[in-house]
Image 1 (cartoon, rainbow over the protein chains, first blue to last red):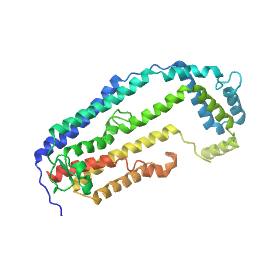
Image 2 (spheres, one colour):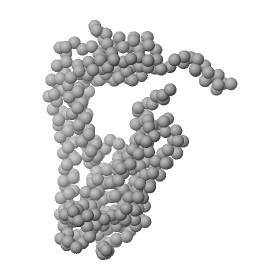
Image 3 (cartoon, rainbow over the protein chains, first blue to last red):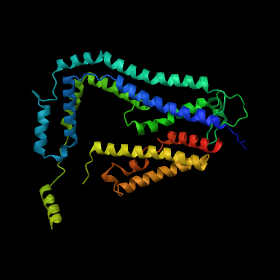
Image 4 (spheres, rainbow over the protein chains, first blue to last red):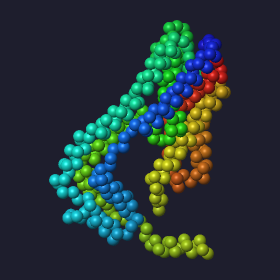
Length: 252
Length: 101
């Protein structure tokens, strides 16, 4: 039987709501600050051209079966032609761009700035919460938890007979941290600076693409082989008759 | 014959579905808090609201999900558990505001 604690409504007015409000506002602030501070790296014309070529080749591979065989072969030879096909890169050129990409201080600085701008407000807020709001019961979690969580959730509270559902402000801070991500994605749009997991995935993808763009020769070579492998199968047989049938049905 | 789906549009639709679910999980938290549900009932409420979200999305596509998404179980069950943290946060907040204080 859990005893019901009666908590002062001043806690609700001065701790729960202000803490959530502050975290939302700091998140919004961080988002706009990171937008101001983010430096757009100047796009390199050659790299851009190559990535667009790769994209075109990919589209061709994906939609190969919707164009007639002759058109497909024509496009394929445009890409894979041995002398001046777009995807054919002579051996010497590959390494130039690689060296350039690896020693790219701008990208590293950018990532560091982003990381810092994420960590600092979190640390500051956590310190603030600890300093001002410790030593009392803040909220009650509406579902029961086991005794193991006591050490984690009831940090400042030194009574061991209090139900584990009554938590301290530190755990309220963490609950807010995780729960407000959904809210931020709603009010700030998809690409906001507050989402940790998105940030991690982005840095991972940037690493992958950084290594990927470092050998464009490989990317082009891979696309070339992919194109070579495509078996063309014409998916729209007798399309003229079918279109005529549909039209006559509509118009009849 | 198979319908060709534009990848961009499918992604856009999935994003819309995700926004709907996020918003509904916040609303579900508020509902659970106001009703004073605790423990299992609260989570039951969350799953109920998520199912209503799936039903609503299916009805919006006039039950022709293959025209909008690549598979029907994607639209029904994707992002089910992503709103859980927001739900718990708002559930705790509203429950405390209404019942404890």
